[in-house]
Image 1 (cartoon, rainbow, N blue to C red):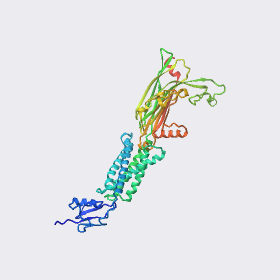
Image 2: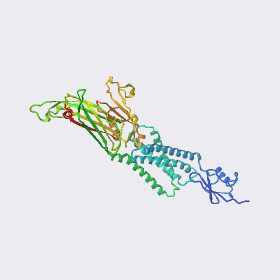
Image 3: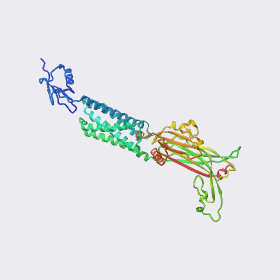
Image 4: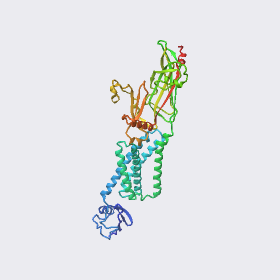
Amino acid sequence: MSIRPWVVVEAPDSRGLRRVTVGGETVGSAWSSDELRKILGRLGWPQDMDLEDPASLCWRGGDSGTWPDRAWRRRAVMVLMMAGLIASMALSAVIGWPDASGALTFGQRLTGVLFVLSGVVQGVAAVAALDHWGRRQFQASGAIVLLGVLIALATDSLLLFMWLEEMEFTPYVLVFMPLWCWSFWALCLLVRNRSWKGVPQPKRFAAGVVVTALLTGISLVYSTMYQPATAPMHFTLKADFGTSRLDRSVPFVQVPLTLYMKNTGGIPVYIINDIYAVRARGALYKRYPGRKDLEFEWQNSVGKRSEEAENYVRKLRYTLMSSGHFYGPGARIEAGQEYTLKHVFQLPKDARYDTVSVDLRISYMRKDRGKLDVEEFETPHYSWRKESGRYYCDPAKGCSRTVIYHARVRHNNNLVNLTRRPRYVTAIWSPVRDPRSSISPYDFRGGKGFLREEQREMDRYGAADVSLRSEVSLAELLKASGV
């Protein structure tokens, strides 16, 4: 008869799992007596062996009936923990991937990469949860789960904080709010169970978590606040009138005009609206006896387009001679890029004007703040055509004829996109009126409150205007043409 080594069943741990040793060597662990029989059966013991036989088994911390494991509860916690970590992993990927793959600046790409890596850690933590609520064959599984939950809580807290600034409903609210509640519950559970036990060097692990959190926070602040604030925009605009020529077939003088633009700043931009307008100015001139001081006559020279004041001038009037787009809505101009437009306009040979001026105005949006759907924005919609749909406005009812450009804009920090309603860029253009541009949720409710909201969105996306006005005397223009 062979002598078998003594089997020792250790006391149950905090989860109810009992370690089994044979001859001083660990051979497995069991949640129940059935699992104990399977372990011993693989080692050659009979399946119907007597578990109460003290000659074969030694029970510590309880007898053969002490199996405190609640399998359904343990598995439910494990499933809930894995589901939350997998959902958090997907959310981190949704946040980070657009910035990691398509952001303009290095800081924004780095932030996106950190969110993607956070998602990878959460995925690993979801796998580690199987071991941590299982047999814990890997000592650091609890610490990895804790790290994944901390990342989830930090991400969801950041999203919740940003959402509270505007409190606008987005589909992602239905994701990160429940995840915030889950991550808070999961953290409390892991801290209560001291899940970091088993980590060889817990202090280094904690230090690594802190350093990672600091790097992520610094990168986020740098990409969203510091870098946009320290990268100002600069444009150079020029306008030159060329040598005029008398048209041989009609009584008009042709005047060449050269318009120039250069992005001298360090950030590429989208042009969201632009216009050039050439106007000729006419006036009545009269001397007022006894009054030569402009202080007494300025109101007589004020025109409709500007508060100009000149001595001996009355009834300023401006006639629009030529107008059009300069660069085009939706066009992009990179840092250092320049553009020149050469245009010829006509003046009547016998016109009674004294000066000719050109106004150039450009509205732009910084590419480091947002990404514009250029293909959609470049499509014009004509307000007087019924096929324009929602942009149609009947001229018979007093609506002005305008060209409308409209498209979605996405912030380059994807956290903003997830916590705000969609924003749209709208540009309204007419050759006879000043162009208008706005960034808004496309509500058009009107009112001072909405105007403030529009201005806030314009500032958020770095939208601004740059303009130039150049004026020349008509006598100088006509001198070269011999008129």
